[in-house]
Length: 279
Image (cartoon, rainbow, N blue to C red):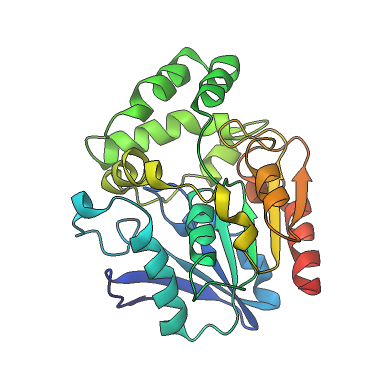
């Protein structure tokens, strides 16, 4: 089932399946939509009400925003809060992948988000390792991919088509062992938004840093990472989260990159199901 619901920050596209304790899944990017998170998280619908949203400016949500006025993640944090209220989600588990994890972490530090359980997948408390990203791209990427990281990724994308081309060029880097099938599963059917990418990565991301506030997070938290994530490396990102959030559990999937629910879906879902049963 899918629908569009009003929020103060714009019309929000949501999709859901299943019934039971709710799980709200937040996509990454930004400039993408929630589609790549399915079908993996849909399998949890046998016991849970699994809800997805497209952040405003992304996917099929409202894209007529004043992008120049966005300087941090506040608009997306507010959207999460209002979607939970509008849908009547009772004690939802918040799942954030990559940039969705940044939003989830900031939401957890608000009065509304305090104490809510979280599953943080391939995400980080701050971005302060651009040198490592550059080194990883140089070590494992093609010349075209290295240029994409060093030049194209650092400049505004002119339109959705240019952003889509950049994303598809970079995607193989996000897998430990990329195959055409895996890459396709991470990109097919995506509604790309260059404006969302430009706004999030070239402006809002510079204001993101929750590293000094992790000790304030009170909800039960599971942190999941592949051991071969080129852009948000385990040692610099997920291990920091797990060490800083009180009582957080860390699950590391071997031979796995940035999309563990695609590349290692069975062990990923086993870890998630086990944690959900206990929290």
